[in-house]
Length: 422
Image (cartoon, rainbow, N blue to C red; front, side):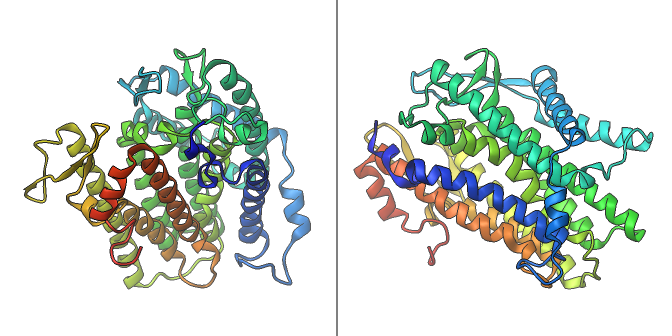
């Protein structure tokens, strides 16, 4: 086993850390639901907090179970059978490459058209996602845990991950298999499917459901609700527009598929990322013109930084010796492994300048909620911590991979994320 995989930043503190995360993360998900729905939208419990109503509303129901299973199955069918181009994934430890069908854009469009059409025909109430929100948290928690049990045994048998430790709890949390497929290697890829399909699309659907509920309650949809729905949907849609970029992420290239990703993708993403729209249902306010301008400007700025930084890296990867960045031939550091580390453009300013774009977009989603509560700002605060932790993990991974060449690269590109600050 490599020393990198023994580092606490990579194994999250071993079995003790894994158990702590598996307890803490669901509790945070539940608490955010309590705060927004049963505590008046305040971060800290107040005198009118309805704990009894909260505990009653998180009980799983057969309706929520049926709703989620139909949702998951529908997305799985689209992943498997909807049209889309086939691309090769990153190189595996054995030198091979798996194939992936990129049909997410078709899937999200068909999903939204189907839901919208069914609602227009009166076949279902779009508010069902709001009404079943609490039970759905519990159902997805149970479902993601059961899925993690399956991939733990399936992965050990068919596709052992490079980082497998032999410690059952730690391997259950991080994943014993790297690319679990049913059937193995040739079939349905569970990790790539769960990464953005069921959870990311559900996030957009939950937001739309919250806007519908606000309309039913007040007779109109607030400017803040429209902005949050629009800005977050653009982000989700862009993920599918550039779906093949998913295959270059740390999750797909380096992580196993265990409880951490299963819970994160299926439960954490839709039920915590939709917090701002959830909050805005009953916090209707007149959005100042300056905020109606500032939030989209921050979102656009963040998106441009995120997209342009990745575009520079993609251009460099395609043709490193002839890539031109900011009007100049790209500079790079040649490593002993044969890889080239980019030193130009945004990547010469900081090792993860793209994370600034991520954080600006996260902040833009919270600002329309204004400043009556700290609760809607949970996401940008959490996300900043996640990005810093991810940068640290990437730094250690690259240090292990490139050795002295990475030290030399860090001398050229001193700042980790924010030039002059961090």
